[in-house]
Image 1 (cartoon, rainbow, N blue to C red):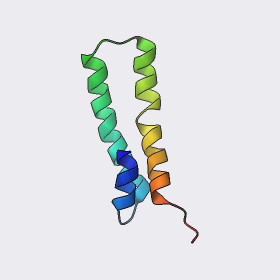
Image 2 (cartoon, rainbow, N blue to C red):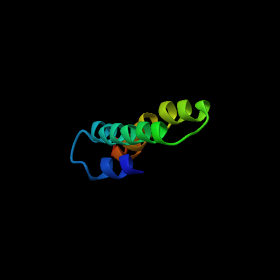
Image 3 (cartoon, helix red, strand yellow):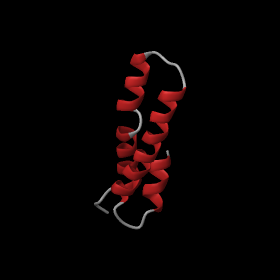
Image 4 (cartoon, one colour):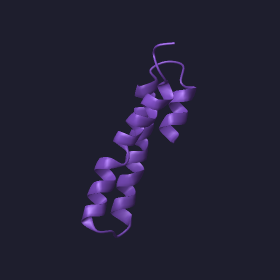
Length: 68
């Protein structure tokens, strides 16, 4: 959701700015994995599938269509 809102508010490079938000959230997710106990499969799934792919999707949806 943060990447989507950022892409909506950005003037240009919408997907790139959304990916920056994804990287910031990824840093928080890595800290979360290090601090809280969880099964290894959950940690791997969390790091690989949650932050960067969802930021990319949020950026693409936030950027909207190019044809208008």
